[in-house]
Length: 227
Length: 78
Image (cartoon, each protein chain N blue to C red):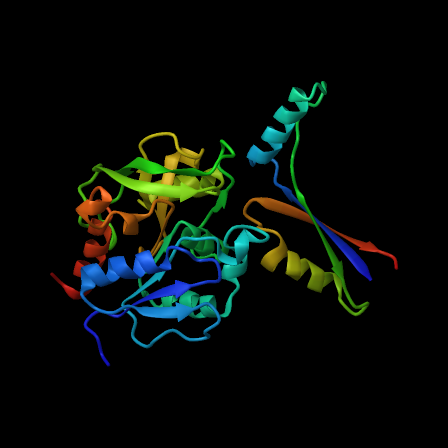
């Protein structure tokens, strides 16, 4: 069964945005999405896109994303990312990507201690990436967040490097969680891995209040298979 | 043999939980608390054959996040 667009969503025990992520990808690609369990050792062949969803994998034991990052399927995800397969991590997925070493920095407890669950304003900092090509540079968009540990931390040298290399994809346009330099989403050096705390999969149709998140998925699909 | 692993935030890393605890202590009327840093204590029961190098590796690969945390390993005589 060769599909036109082969996307996979990984589910960890405690993931709770995996179905939303799959629906978003199915809406945009018109294809069924592979659902992959954390205990699987292998990914489906020839994937075009891998998504790590939000949630509370392994109950956030030890640190958010720490256990999931060491689960069997993540070895395959790290290997695929190394081959250039696009990987999107949202919320807990972002935490997993930092814990797995695919993205620099760490996501710490929100500066205000509280869980933050609301729509926030973001600024698109880099619109040259696979995931963000459909936005305009410096575009103001609105996407919801829902997290307790979204306070992005990296040392100053790392932050300077991320800024200098255009790897800050999104920045909060308002105070949300105490993140260093208001960073909401970062890219890896090769540009094929994006981690972000806001949930683009929750903004894919007008009934959800807007389509600012849909643009991200459309950008990736267009970039991978052509318009 | 019992091993205790103390995981703490690196200097310079802000600790929102420590800040909140400090605030609560002040609220309870305790004065003179200048700073609070919250960490984590992990106790392991290991075979005597487990080397210090192996314990270090456990800490670096899982028990601590080296981006934000330090760790200290302490062997407790049985």
